[in-house]
Amino acid sequence: MKFDITWLTRMERMKRISVNGAALNCDDILHEILLRIPPSTIYKLIIVSKIWLRVICSPSFLQGYTRRWGQSFRLVGFFVCNFLYLGRPRDGYRRPRWEPALPILSTCREGDDLKHSGILKRCGYFIDSSNGIILSGLHPKTYYVYNTFSKQKYQLPEPQQFYKVLCMALIVEECLDGEASYKVIRARCECKLKERNTVSIETYSSKTGKWKQSTLMCSTSFALRPRTAGMVVGGVVHWFAIWGKLAIYDPRLGDRYIALIRLPIGVLTREHEESVLGESSDGVLLYGQSNNIGVEIWMLEKEPEPNNSAIYCNCIRLKYKWVLRWRLNFKVLWKQMPSLSTHSKETQLLSFLPRNSTSVFIRSGWNILLCDLETKTVEVVNYQGRGGSISWESSKIVPYFLPSWPNASCAS
Amino acid sequence: MGERGEEWEAVMLRKAEEEESKAVKKVKLVTSDGVTMEVEISTVKEMETIQAFMNATDTDNSIIFPLPKVSSHILSRIMELMSGEYDQELVKRLSHEELKEICMVANYLNMKTLLHLTASAIANLIQNKSVEFVRHFFNIINDFTPEEEVQLRKTHEWAFEGVDED
Image (cartoon, rainbow over all chains, first blue to last red):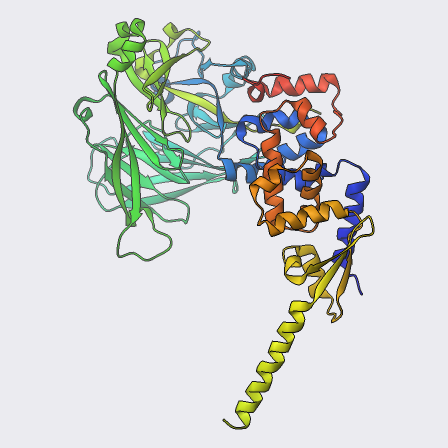
């Protein structure tokens, strides 16, 4: 009977495992067990021992874990993005000295720490955030990317293209172990409504460290809505376009097309004031609109065209359909919180939550409410900061969520 | 029928003999306490570690396989689980010690179904339990200094919110 090498190494490992007594602590068994523990418990187990901390924080474990359980996020605060300053023309409205450029309404200690760290003072204005990565700056030349995990701020090289009016998108491809790979897109918005079925964009990639210009084609004439940030779902960018349309751009395989679809028409459509985009728990685009009467929310279903057998479908070869998910009359909220009804004129849909199909943030006066659309219940979100000092009308209020990832480096 | 037919028949016969010899072929597993257990070759199929060894060594004799770290008690428990087609109820009846040992053996012998089953059972046992319970269950000594533990809890405040402490 012969033993081959692989067998011997197995035997060796076995011996090693049983010698130290705590055999279940060997990494691969621990991996198998911890992968099966739900998100509510897993992260507090980092204090069991140093081995457990190391295993739970390892990128390979986190990757396998999020694939199995999905990514969970925690709210840190709300960024205030005042449009008057971000794309300010030379003779535009100046920010008063007392007003911070990048205010955060903190909702927890981490938010307080970020606010007092001073980092936000040198980042320009807020543009967008995704997976804990913040994109900020000042149009048209200065942009920063701040990575909360590595606490590193990076100034992007100066863009090559000059766009007088633009919208942007931040695509975070991967963010593990403090290292993030991402793309930043600037897209030109035509301000004069010329007949045009192309749009110039410029893409920065963290891999190449460079900006690259490209021209996207669309089958009909269109223009992107200025000063918005694109919603990225599964690597596909969604921008609002003018005339009640949505522009879809899938950069993943280097295609240069834009699909244009009409936004859904609901009972509020004619006089809606707010439009926001989000992502459902199963990775589908959500669209919400509101006025001071209520909220309507749709999801965008897509399927390949029936005569298309290709495995990969470019975004222009898909069939899109809006499906109404929720309709909520704000009266339901006033019944629960009568004190809020005094702000009824000033109630609006603020934003979705990351990878969440059932909750939204709603603003009512200075109050920010978390609304569960399934149970039609609301709770007030307490934040640090003076609501009265915010120009709600000219600002976009964006929740800042961090992925719930533990960090082993904090222990050493 | 001709020469070819006969040839074909001979091949079939040889095949059948081979099958037969395979069917009776047994594997002897020798446990840490010196007990020899004879198991069918089909049983060993799920033990990928042993299977890999058998594929690598081309032997006609019945195989003796030493398992120096597996007790006869644990091996018979594993046989019970396998013949019971990994019934959840059987798993529930195992003691914590048995469960842990079977999980280790499943990993060592690379038995995918058994590893999944026991790892899930252990995960069920420790979820929503206190950190102290988990340490006790796994015989782990806390190797953090009190300062380190406080620091970890502080930097991961979000992970400990809404957790009932021990």
